[in-house]
Length: 525
Image (cartoon, rainbow, N blue to C red; front, side, top):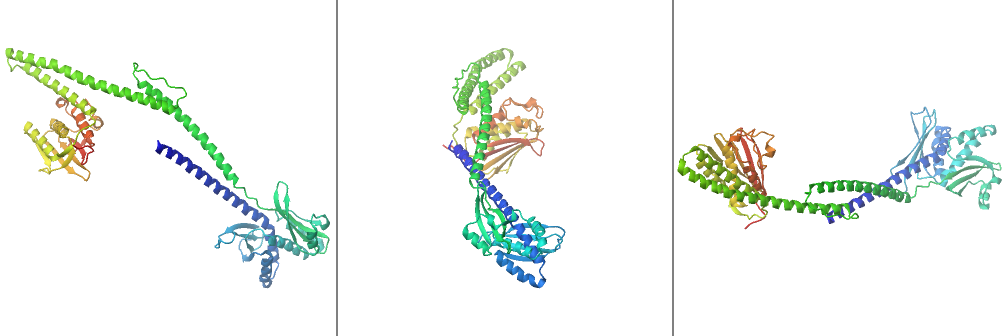
């Protein structure tokens, strides 16, 4: 439960942190993009004026003019020749700043139509120097023209500005006495204004030559980034969406658990009463209760099955013993060599063998606590091989290596003897001339491989070969077969020893059984 809680809680915390981090990154990226767009719009008009000023300069005067313009702008101004001259081109980009002490730097590139000259301005941001210089450059360009051409030139210049540029009488300006005094003295005034509902902005005022008018630039809005609480708002929305999604998942899970409850109830026998569930009980608690109830019913059924097998097996032994006794009496009258009597004795022995197999298999299934002790596995296998050679001396049985070395293992001697007895007798039952037994010792376990040269196994029966009462009639001669419990008992013994067993076909064309038994066991005497 603690692991489940930590997993769910950790996932929620990780998801929340990831959403918050992504929200902050997205918000920062949007603000950066908006800021660059703001700089680009504010500076385009200034860049167009600089291009005009530099373009009309003689090559000898360009360096001096650029130096003066850079001082007025408090920015680095450069010019380059460009082959691109077909249309107007203006762009702005951020540049890497090697100094962590200063703010980010930007470069604005401007190139007028039909011109091969490109002007580049490197600056830190929009400052009063840039705004004042913009007004100066505009008035300077207008002052060079005859009076009758100034209005048209003024209208053409304003097209490159993304904020208001106009001429107004100084008397109509809303300036304080200090600002009015500076304006009358020919100075440029940069004032910060606050517009209701729109934040702060710059207004630039410059005297229009010797007239009583003034050039006004603005309002030029300050850049207002989206506030950080938007990231918190995004986080809240994301958490709400996550809550809805989790609720839908839990609802779907609840429906599936309810369906699983119905499946569990369907397993219940009709005679078994299922406790009534409280309507307010949680689905998982209810399901847990039903599964516990089902486990108790299954355990009871298994106990009843085991009791029934033992009872039937023991009850069968009495009439079988009576039949043996009566056959002995009959054989005294008809002779012990009578064919029918011998057949009856054989059938009774087979029936006793079947009962013994059933009891053995049921006991192995029910036993959970088997005692182990150190054993020599090679010695156990050698004894079983020697016994098989006595039973069938014509069969060629070889061991690999020929003299099996001592192989220590922890196990139950009685069960291991029964295991290899069943495997070897199964191979002997179907072998034509040869059986091979190989022992391979690995670092953690011992592998035993038993091959025969019989007819082999069909692939479709191999998965069912170790099931109780299964007989591979189509791939092995059923006339030689037993009752289908020998290999099932072998598998149970291997599982009791925490090992594995599998069947396949070998190079001889017959069956191969591979057993792996671990060297260490959990329970020792």
